[in-house]
Amino acid sequence: MTRQALLENTRISIRSILSVPVRSILTGLGVMIGVGAVITLVALGNGAQKQVEAGLEALGANLLIVYSGEPRGTALVRTNTSNIRPTLTETDIEMIRALPPELVRLVAPASTANAQLKYENRNIAATVIGTTVEYPDVRNFYPVYGEFFSESDVESRRAVVVLGAQTYRDLFVPGQDPIGERVRINGIAFRVVGVMEEKGSAAQDASVLIPISTFQRSVSGSSNYAMANIQAASSEVMRELQVILERELLRLHRMPSIDVADFYIANQLDLLSTVQGVAGTFTMLLASIAAISLVVGGIGIMNIMLVSVTERTREIGVRMALGARGRDIMAQFLTEAVILSVAGGVIGVALGLGASWAAVEFLRTAAVATASSVATAFGFSVVIGLFFGGYPAWRASRLDPIEALRYE
Image 1 (cartoon, rainbow, N blue to C red):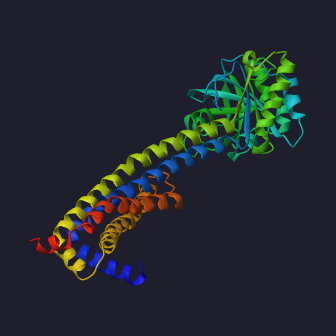
Image 2: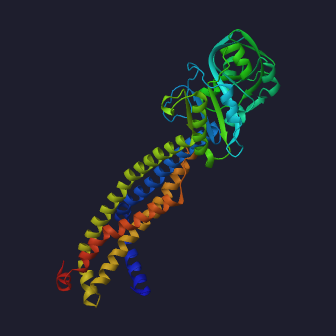
Image 3: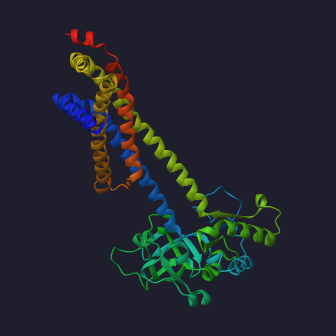
């Protein structure tokens, strides 16, 4: 088809579409809704995935956690470790710290216990975490008021405590300065030195942190650790580091295999890949459901184009009598179908992007519209026009010009 013929077909198609505006809008409505729905749902799925990934990053970068106890799937964070017998020894921690810096950046051993906290007439239950000064950097969890306890606090076994955000709200009046106040943990007085940032996680916000040495002397009475938080040097070495840790810990614990080990290593990459896989599948499912609207829109285009062929039978006969070939007639009707679907696709893209923006601004929901999802949805709308417009165009091209001229 020459450029001039294409321009002429486009002009005739646009004039035909505009001659019945209401019908044309209703015809393209299915495509508009389909494209808009695909873009919006994919954006919401991507946003949900980004939120989960951000939540995992908030737990710490390149994080591996060695837990005491039997292996329990691929969960990165156990919500309750206080009832697990600690099996990690000081020798285990020293082995991890002795690994080369190309593998391990920081190590923060920790143990947890449930305890009663009391301040004046307020009494609550909370999780006490005994750990070292590396904990904030390893777990990406920092104080927003006051400070974290120091290395000298750990060495001197000082009774100092850093409050989680929810624990602070439960114990103190809003706006009250807690620094220097005395909080009792299981009856023992601890001086408050800081308040941690809010993470949105009950396991962290409803906890308090004290030096591991103080925890072992005053809370657990055990020199072992329940877990070891490890920050790998990079994400590329996390798998290698996990293999090395399993091998060395099995040797130190004199265990034949990981299946019967008294420890378990959780890798952030495992949870991240699982989340990405589930989120990707869920997003594709939503997009597939939304794509049904595009198919319905294509059926609408085919239906209206068949009606248009019937209505314009005499016009087709006149064009054929003047020398138009079958392929010229087919090109004209295909052009009209594609224009309808492309117009619906453009409006659908605007609707999808607008809905994604509205979800972020008004519903406070994460939505990430990508260029690939927009291009895919729009491209599918063009394919819909070509596919469902093909049969009506072919039917128009096969009309007998004599019979077409006689049609009333």
